[in-house]
Image 1 (cartoon, each protein chain N blue to C red):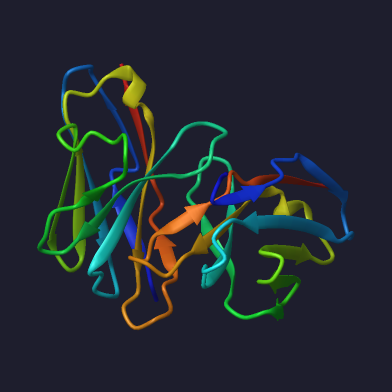
Image 2 (image 1 turned 90 degrees about the horizontal axis):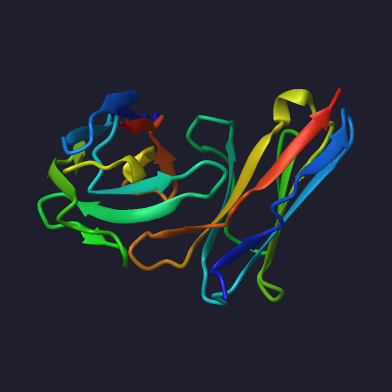
Length: 111
Length: 116
């Protein structure tokens, strides 16, 4: 079983819609959760971090964490074509600061 | 803040030669840096964890004699790909954590290595 799993997509949404990205993780002891955005040919850029159950909002982005279900999600409201990228879910189990990345979900926002 | 740079951004080398990639934390001291490799349309693969002043910890399957990592200072880690082969062509990315924060990793811009 992979440490972190994501639906690879591709996910397509029309401009202005809500994009929903999902991630599950295997280690119940995981402590920190992150969403990174990666444009083609570029390195990942941190979008959101979340550490406790519930929702965390930052602008158009909302991260949701459910530790009981071992599930993390990212909602992007009012999606823009510039949001088209691959979104990587990362989990830190708290040992040695090592991150485990999912394979990423490719998002395309259609104008 | 929390800016990580890499140099070079792109490098082309001939098979059998060695290439050095530098990773610098510009506005903070990083006791730990990480090196990743990413093949096209695949996710990041952690190669090794680089600790200042000590030997790097390599992930299973990563040849430590081929991918030499040196973390000589709190702001610089280097990755040297020795005796490069075409299959080493990839996107190499480093990251660093800001001390005192809750383990967020900030990534450098990456180095595109092409071995001909």
